[in-house]
Image (cartoon, rainbow, N blue to C red; front, side, top):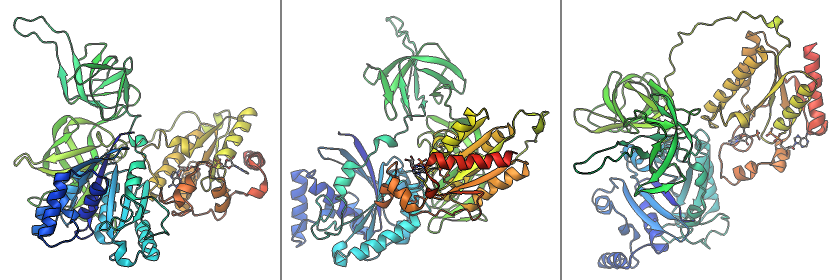
Length: 617
Ligand SMILES: Nc1ncnc2c1ncn2[C@@H]1O[C@H](COP(=O)(O)OS(=O)(=O)O)[C@@H](OP(=O)(O)O)[C@H]1O
Ligand SMILES: Nc1ncnc2c1ncn2[C@@H]1O[C@H](COP(=O)(O)OP(=O)(O)O)[C@@H](O)[C@H]1O
């Protein structure tokens, strides 16, 4: 394995970031001898006994002069297992711009915390930015442990404080490592000074972190960068090669695949995939630069996008986005006009509205804000002159991000992360159908199973569906896990996303129940208010709704742990996992409560069927 890991670092000025990076480079033997001796010499001339590892990192001079690291510096190193690129982003107060530029392609973000100071405002900002930028893995390096006597208690105190904040964010993989970058404890080698720490060293963790599955291999997206046309140069024959070149932003493209070109919508197939240098490939995937030949001659230009016929990005001119404002010269306001650069397309656009400014420390949304200043983050509604071909950022970082450029100065003024097509005010009228509910062959009902992960919801729900269908009653299972692969693929596990997950699933259940199906829903749905909204929506539509609480105690779910999720959550590898570090609000008066003492899944399913029977009478 020698895949590349992109690493972004963030920390406050004195957290010891440069020393940590120096230590990583030094101890992993990645430093060239001559650089090392230069460092030794400088350190010696300053009367320091040991080489000052901070001298190995760039931004050093500036840091020494101003006490800050000023720009993103990239550093490369390798171990036999992996290659690494470190984007060293600054920790001082004007951090956002550089963190956004340095970290937007990172696989891992490393946040440094000085064990003496604990979680600071900056640590929270950095964690928030890492989650906003969709960096899949976060490592919290609790540094300077030597200055707190390698205290386990202190480490755990900081860890729980950080976790409390992180539960409000979308961070899927969170790890904590106690260390001393200065003396090298737990950086490359595990330290003897902290026998209570059971995890691995930082470098070992970086070598092991699994990033393959972070790449989006599902949504095929190739923004066309340039078109190679048939040409005739003087005195030569006509080359009839026509190809479309670009870097694959997502998915896997194979020879023979059916593809659609947007915005025209023409569908054709891939007749060849070429790598740079003219090597023919069978397939290529996200991150690779390729040239495609297509079976049909279609009019394609730069800025078009190649995707699969049944998996297309949004095409539109109005979108909602989170933006980070990056200049002190002007501010962002409604009405501001900019050039938008999005994938390989560039067009003009206007800020229609500033919805709110976000306080990254408290996550409070200030809806009265009129502008964004340097380093501030807010949500805007934006309208472009030409349609963009985009995805939500959380689904695809490449087709979900853009920058705004000030036409007058040519400066980049903002980085944007698209949340989705603009949620317009509704001008849609409700049409009532001509078929009355009573005219349908069967009567629908929604059966909602809620409970912890591993409580048995899916197993019981599947059995209920199977037995209903076997008995001739139309039924359909909506399983949370499965819906998260399609309808709800853009949602994570923050409270807001879970609410949306429950809302959408509730709406689909309502439609299916209206169509006459017994709709069996299996969803953790941990918040009582979200479930209540679904119940109310059914009541409003005159549709029966029953709530079944799969009341399996946490300890039993954890013992079953069919997907190993609890183990991961306990190890701190995933955060805000329901029951572990995220709440589950049990229903107070469910229509039915299933407990382990009721027997196996089949016995529990029988109880649910009895209930359905009673209600349907
Ligand atoms: N953080 C976190 N919390 C809870 N569950 C998590 C989380 N991350 C992943 N998973 C897996 O996703 C499944 C729950 O998805 P749901 O759509 O039912 O969740 S919810 O509606 O938001 O409550 C759930 O599967 P089930 O065991 O089938 O419930 C988990 O395996
Ligand atoms: N009543 C039951 N008694 C014992 N084990 C059960 C029961 N119901 C489900 N299980 C088992 O518990 C595990 C988790 O069930 P599952 O349906 O996947 O839970 P969830 O719906 O929360 O994802 C599975 O291995 C399943 O076989």
